[in-house]
Image 1: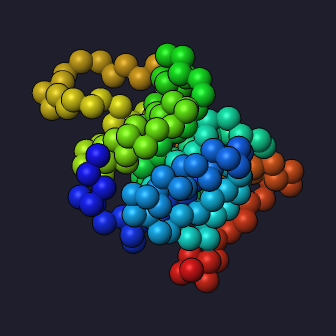
Image 2: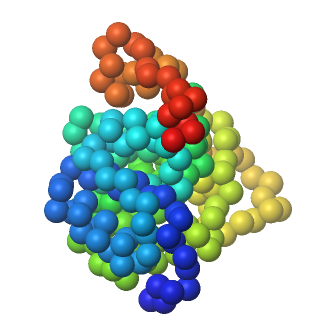
Length: 196
């Protein structure tokens, strides 16, 4: 690990995890890597509100949180009409590494998948990967997110096989339902909040 290879001091990163100890551990590691602009949230709903208020360059979030988990949060980031940062890299944390969970995270638009317990080395490698090897952002059929193919084949002529992919763009009502807003309204980002 070569932490002095990058200057992360002006990169904003959002860490969302319902477990305070895990959130603080990840933030501590990020500070050691040189991050200074760290936003901590204890659930996906708070994280989404923070994203409406300020720009974020990278997201690290737990897959299982209440009331809005990391999977639904990732779906909101990728598809909500009022989200201004659809292409921000999302690194999903989880204590569960079953194959179907990895595929589900990928299909909802997560860039990387990181299994707990988190080590400095694995977190560093995921961060470096989203910086050094960004994947093209794709809107194809029902899928919205980073290109799921890590190895590009530009001459592909086969049939599109995105079965089981995430549903396309969410309606405002679906966003409100995910955020637990009963009246179907979502908070609009103000010009002042966007500038902050």
